[in-house]
Length: 336
Image (cartoon, rainbow, N blue to C red):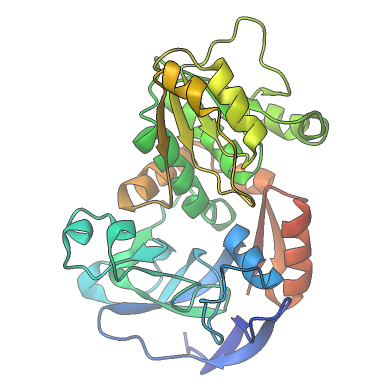
């Protein structure tokens, strides 16, 4: 194909609220080791919404940056030495590091002092085209449609929380609090690993998402079933009340995995947690092994995108963020 010299991109134009504009942007030439990817879908997440709202704590994202780190697309200018020839459908690992430090050698970019994140500290994929280091790309299995593959990055975050940090196995009984995107995906990871799992939300959550949960084979409840005794609790709600529930319901030496981020500092019943010797760990972002597990799970659920992902044209970016803010679907993706 003949690649055009410009393409639409959602760019941060200022640090004021609602200052994400869709404009035509010149395509840079891929640097050595990079490939040019034509975006099929780019998911929007909470960090993108914070930038859209102009929230405190996100002023460091440079103006002129193209948003988006949940990317699926097709290589249009490839680096054959990295096994990504033209026409390969790929997803992008969101974080990258210097490639030299001990964290990078262990493929733990989050521990790198020079880490960069697509859509935050370098241009992302809420655009028709994006340049991405070939080392950050993973080929998508043929059985996974693009609308499902766009869930790879958030599913990798859930996979890290559940399988990596939470060490969940088929022997565990799990509660996942919060039926948002990460909560639903975390419950699906538990299900894939063979663990018994329930998804816990509010009465409103049950009223609005019980049908979706049922189609996914998940139990969504606002109170734990009588006799249900979790060994692991995955906290994805971002609410102090959920932390309280976890501390009260977990047994002595149970495991609490906190994957949520909180709008205000949460309150934890620390004395009760200490007396129970709870194993409390946090989980943030994801890395290459988590992406591979996510793609394995998506191969088992190729229709997941049809159930979870609502697609909005890139030019309707304001509508897309309105939908993200209102939680109208578990995942909103833009299509450039």
